[in-house]
Length: 147
Image (cartoon, rainbow, N blue to C red; front, side, top):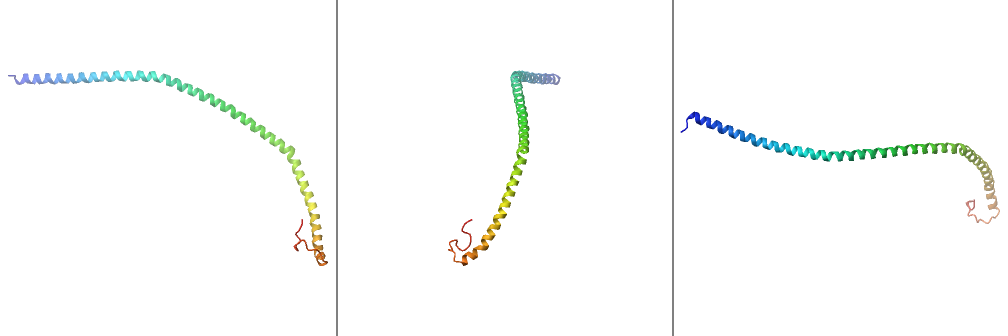
């Protein structure tokens, strides 16, 4: 039989064998993991370059569109200034005379209207005299037949 020292030595050797086997297995798994990670990083790098190229192309196109938009904005600002200038000229050229003509025509209408009002007042004053003298009465009695 084995002595206690030999048994202890055998257990220590068995413990070390199991420990070394476990560490070897862990290192083997770690090596596989590192290999897979390296492969994944390599594939990612291969895919990243075209993606970065596409992104750079997209940014370049967006900058072109912004440049076009800037040109359009400047042109619209120029058109707005031109329309403003034309509006100012038109209001200066036609605004004053048109306002004066409107004021003149209003004055003429008002002056003629006052004469008409005076004529109507005279006509209304004469209406009761006509009715009393045997008028035809075809106006309905209210005096509002024709205007």
